[in-house]
Image 1 (spheres, rainbow, N blue to C red):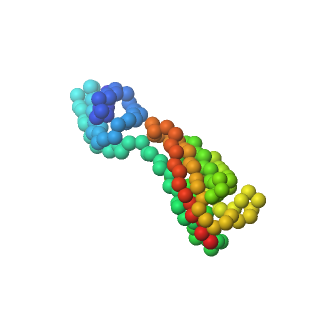
Image 2: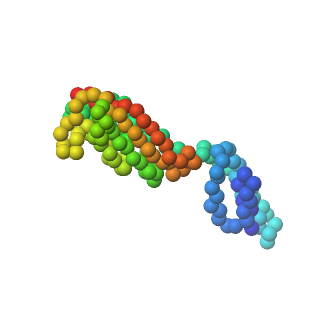
Image 3: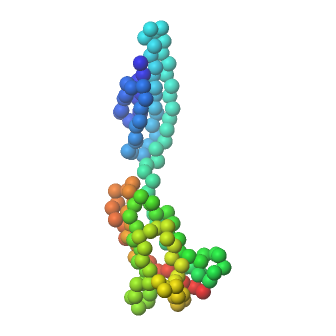
Length: 149
């Protein structure tokens, strides 16, 4: 027979165990195997560290240069949770919406919907997103992106 002590107060007596930790910490897992027929036992111990759920913080660069040189030509919305929600809206200095996306993989290239390049200058953004593993709920991030040519 087997006894699994997960180090957090949970003990199982099954042949295999699936266990999820919810609180970050260091846990010592112990498995004790008993052979009642031959009157033998063996204990195996392993320590595991659980850092907690992965929390995503979306990074929005504040400058980009869409000049076609292959370097910094697009604004990439990095570190968004692919399983969370995402909505970015970008406005020009007159309050006209120039870009909107709900796809964190879709980069902003500094072009209008008609493919025409936008003017150099500051653009205001509002990003609303959620992280499926965080209890923080919907997050709002605002700021400016400087489009330089």
